[in-house]
Every structure is written in structure tokens, then in C-alpha cells.
Length: 180
Image (tube, rainbow, N blue to C red):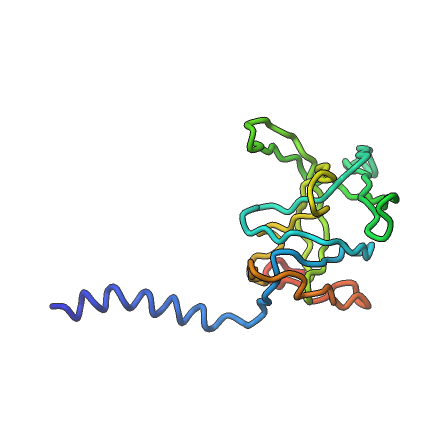
């Protein structure tokens, strides 16, 4: 009697383990703070790798919404990583707006744009919400949407995966799951 019960419990666990073992070894270990690169602009930033955040966010100052070819766009500045008194201007198409509930219970409506990030050898283009992060330690926060399936975070490590995507083709190692 014990064998069928044991099989019913262990078999699904063993199958799940076998499925995980068949996944390609594309995941890399990153520290909780890393250097990334925004592409195609090639802007290097220090970032917090945050497994608790669903969506990534990016510092955005002097936001100006405008229309281009019938679509909503936004231009914004980030602090120049080479010159803390300087700014770098970026333009992106707005993909949507998100409503964020902050820790204090207040709501924010943030524009969301698609941003390509080079993280170690991985390149992934995903959504980032735009918010003023100047009071925070890092201009970017990389959430699970950019990390899913390719990055594991070591909370005891920092700066172990410098950005090194193949920028000659402008892509690095693309995510096959998203058709990129």
C-alpha cells in the first residue's frame, strides 16, 4: 500500500526536477547591485537587481510627453553617470501607464516605456516605469520582468557581471521566449 502512495507523491516531484534539469544553462548569477547598460544609447548605470519588483523602473527627470507619428512618446533626462551635474536625454514610445500604490498608501500614475538592457551577457528589452529616483541610491531598478529565466541574484555579491553584450549586432544574447 505504501508504494502507490509514495509513487504518487514522489513521481511528480521527480518529473519536475527532470524538467528543470533539461532547461538550457543560460542563467547567470548576478549581485544585488550590478552595472548595466541601456541600449541602443550605450548608457552605463549602476542598478539594484530587485527580485521583489515585478517591473523595472528608471530614473526620469524633466519628462515631456509628445506625439510622434500618431503615437504617444516621452522625452526624459537621466543623470549622466560620467558627470553628476550633467543629464542624458532619452526618448521612447509610451507603451502604457501603470498605477503604483506606494508604501505610504499614496497612488502614482507612471508612464511605462520599453527599454533594452544589457545585463552581463544577457540583453532583454522589457518595460520600465519612469519615476524620479534621484533621492534613491540607484537610477535603475531591474525587476523580474528583465531577469526572468536568465538571471539569478546572489544577495551577498555586488558587481560580478559587468555588461558585455555583443553591441556590434546591437543585441547580445536575445531572449528566444520573446522572439527577440
